Length: 220
Ligand code: DX5
Ligand code: ZN
Image (cartoon, rainbow, N blue to C red; front, side):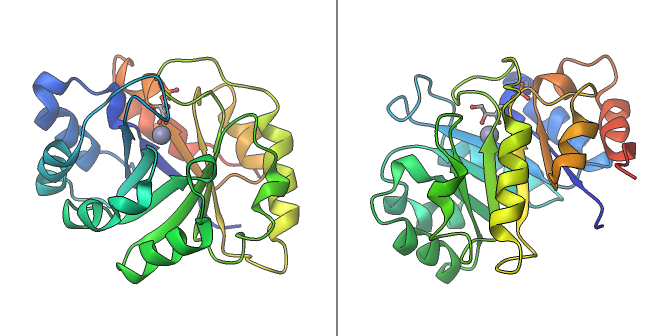
């Protein structure tokens, strides 16, 4: 089995000292920067937009995994690419023409992900699973860091792995929300490839050590 990836969620960083937190992630064993974009419409919160993303991109030495919690994401794909996104993940619930949006992301030169909310069944990915690089399973209701992990996530990971089998074996399954050292091993055993963690990393006394801990967990 391939080694899992860890993606610290910048949403939990200290925005007044953002450079320090970017440098910390650069120095750490983390694989990606996870960047949460919220519009106050798709989710009941507003995070940050293009200027902040471009500033992060300027100093980040690892790929930027951009999670769009916005309506009409198709309108902004080009700008997110220009601001430095490497992977762009859109919410299934926010896309009327999901296939078109996924292919627009790929044509822009990014990898493409689709995210599903806790209330969205894995079965709704049936027609798109061949076309995406990544599926993000929300393990909290999107909008805020520091929420409690939803246990039904384990079953959804197994269902998705079964759905993708023989169709998209390289599919990355990413888990976002409430991830910590208590659930990480079970998530990897269920079939997760990418662990996003915000609060668990940035509220830790030693974030570099916490990232190393998440990397060290092995399902075998
Ligand atoms: C929630 C965001 C997550 C969030 C995760 O809407 O998509 O990426 O920052 O934060 P934690 O790990 O604190 O739940
Ligand atoms: Zn996220």
